[in-house]
Amino acid sequence: MNNFPKISKNTHYKGFPSDIKVILGDYDSKSISEINAGDEIFVNSSKTDQVQDVKKVMYRGIIKEIRCTGQVFNVNSTENQKFYVIRKEIRDYCRKKYNKINLGVFEKNIEILSSGQLKNGDYLLIPKHHQVKKNSLIKTEEFVKTFSNNIRMKIPDIIPFTRQLFRWFGYYLAEGMILFSSDKRYKQKCRGVSFTIGIDEIVLLNDIICYGEEIFDIKPKVIRISERNAYRINFYNTQLGEFIFCLFNTGSSRKRIHPFLLSASEELLSELINSWLKGDGWVCSSRGIIIGNTTSFELVNQIYFILINLGELPSVGLSAHKNQNRNKARELGYYLRHNLYNIQLHNNKKRSHRKQNKSYMFTPILKTKNKQYEGYIFNLELRNSSSFQANYFLVNTDD
Image 1 (cartoon, one colour):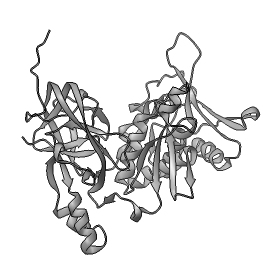
Image 2 (tube, rainbow, N blue to C red):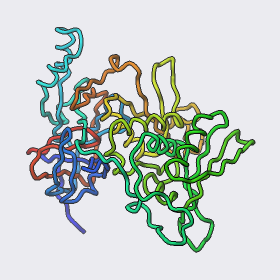
Image 3 (cartoon, rainbow, N blue to C red):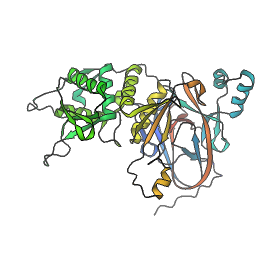
Image 4 (cartoon, helix red, strand yellow):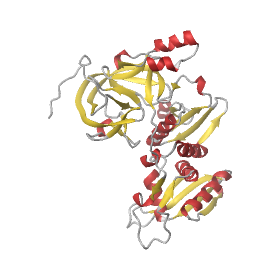
């Protein structure tokens, strides 16, 4: 048995529990415990660096839990872990002198503070990432394994990035699924792609059919399901099924966006988000917000990341179940198969407590609390940088 030294809250060790997410250079994300030396990660706004070493130690002591406006995912760290911060006093100064938040003053007053020094109202920083080189096409052979001569209908070898393509992708994220073969000799052999939409969603019906035929040269089979007041649109094609399965997976709780697509232009990513919202979103006029739902933890994080880079101020929440508080729902015996996450977009950004410039989103802290922790703590040593993103927030690695 390994004997780990007891590390109390009074030591100078800095780090995070294993579930903290780190953003990779290809726009994917990993838990900090899965990061390896040599991985390229985002270290600041539009900047990447290589991980030189991953520090891991058994920790017994106090962990600071930090919750910020617009995020249901807390960031936990040791009390000595450093963050890039704008103090609450700077916000109060701006309001008193300018009667508003002055971003120029904010930018000049970014400090590095330990989590033990943080308080409610302080602002943490979330960097934005704008890639100079954008992908403009996709080679299907890099994502499809089945290129046999026995395939009757092949999809194009090269597919240009277009608004129609990304709109179709967004519809799949909201309404699509992969069709698999029932032949037990094969494990997850794709037969095609299927969409299920409401009988009144005529625009979505026409878009899915027309764009699918135009892009992939496949004519779908449309089935009306009267008992569900819905249409089923099936594109039967093995290669198309493999292609979409590789890019987005299937199943409401497992869907995600392949990192390759996250390097598309902002216009195309905006098209993908808008079409996803047409399928899985609605407008709450009384609150002036647009809300989209998903049960996929990975997808909600990717959409949140895309929206920040598009200049939006998204909020991530956890929806109630059966119109009840989730803890109350469990007490009443409701079966909660998956968490239902929601993304909220406010029409009036000026009224938001969060602020942004070209490089960062500034997010105020709602609540902090201390809790006892015993387990592994991780931190990263980088080749040329002293910062990285932990659950999106910019943290410092200097001793």
